[in-house]
Image (cartoon, rainbow, N blue to C red; front, side, top):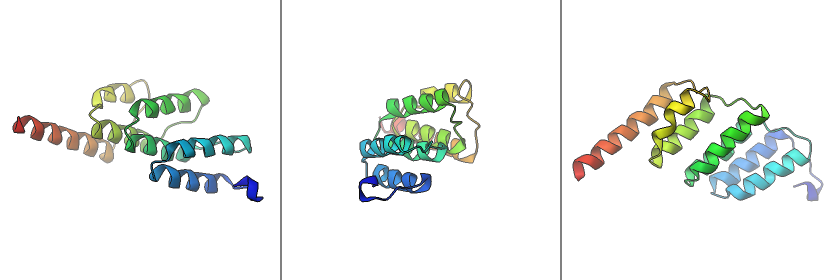
Length: 132
């Protein structure tokens, strides 16, 4: 983007990163995140959320968890959306085991979306168990 003489702001970077991640092109999203930082913009929680959502959609849960840890390490405070994205990804990929860790040491606050994801996972497991 900057090669064309256009210097985007945070919101523009975040929208383009989101578009890449929605298409499953998370690597391009990360590359743009790096460009964003190199151009003097500090990413906010919403920018990290769109990348985390992209990672979760393609099943890269380990990378999503590493991104959460990176956020915490640099002082970007995850919000309810961050945790619900991560939990929803864990549920969809059968990795709900870390829920207590999210609630405890990582500071997740549970809300309706949180419990909706958990209930969906329980129902799915119950159906799978009944079909065996």
